[in-house]
Amino acid sequence: MKTTHPARQPVTQLPEQLTVKTFRIATLFLLTLGLSNISYAIEQGVTDDTITLGVISPLSGPASLIGKAHNLGVRIWNADVNERGGINGRTIKVKYEDDGYVPARTLQSLKKLTDLDNIFGLVGTSGSAHLKAMLPVLDRENIPAINAIAVNSAHFNPVHNSVFVIGPTYCQEIHAALGKLVEMKSLQKAKFGLIYQDDDYGTDVRCGYLKAIEEYGLNNVIELKYHRGQKNFSSEVLKLRRAGVTTLLAGGIVSETAAMLKESYRNRMNLTILTTHASHLLAVQKLAGKAGDGYFIADYMPPLSNTDIPGMKRFIALAKKHLSETEFKSISRYSTSSYIGALAMEEGIKQCGKNVTRKCVIDKLENLKDFETEGLMGPISFGPGNRQSATSAVIIRSNAKTQSFEKVSNYIPIQ
Image (spheres, rainbow, N blue to C red):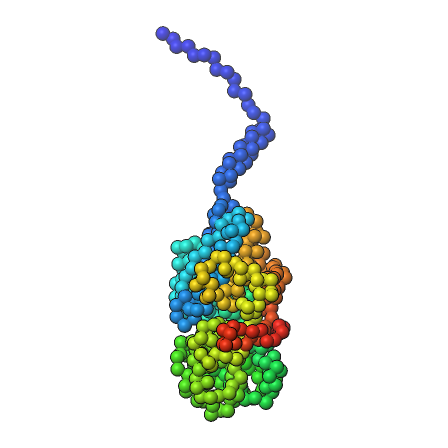
């Protein structure tokens, strides 16, 4: 039996131009459909709803008081920015790591934050030598980083594209403040001495000391180096006394400075003492006891008591709102500086809108100009080839009797 098939209909041939056009439309439709399910957050540490940042600081070891105060400043900012709705609708998460003030541990902390916690950037970079140890990784991965805790010229000279430094170096602040102190106290004929730490921090402190000595023609009679974490300074102070020192630059951190002050007091040395901003802490006052009254501090942040400054008034109110009573008692100038650093990072991220990438944030920070801090410090500016906003220095004096610090100079331009 013969099988019959229905007659085949002729195939209509589409014009070639229509075929190409249809293909292009279909392709575009599929791409659009796929992209609609892809977040703007193609960068590590960024999702549709969150941005994760990291902090590395010394929460243990000789600089732990500094690290803890620094973290409190970031926490205040973190709570406040999320209460304000996050950055362009994204909630900010912050991961914290303790490096114990040991550079090798700093690198381990950075590895954990980048490989396990998948951070986008850093708003805390520990000490001078510690950030220096991280620079190769930050350079290679192009990780945006704000340093507002311990500034060293090696952090920005040569330029490291993703690293932004807020505040003067120890060299710059010591140079400016020591010169101003000589003028204020008529110390042109004094005998100057220096005790400094045997690392990058100490080298930077010595840099500022020697610049001031040379510029003002001062009499430098002795320079003494000590080991990080050293507790006994009887030998150093004895050498100061034998050299006839009358003005001392005490380049300690916390406990070291307090030990130098106490030993000088015990030896009844009537010294004019200048320290770095690392001693702008009530803990140094308390550790030094009676010897903690009257020493001077080279800094670039005002005392917490300066609530006549709008930015300080706002910061103190936020600290009281977001911290416990015990935590509030632990804030210091390191809390305000880290708060400002976090605000700068916020501004860089905010300017990128929804499409937050490391490259975009670095570009926005590079072009940040005259970013206001409501008087907490001078306006912050960076630029192509410039990764430091040095602002200006100021001299602070310790008042142990009232357990406070007082600004005793006008702001001094950084050269």
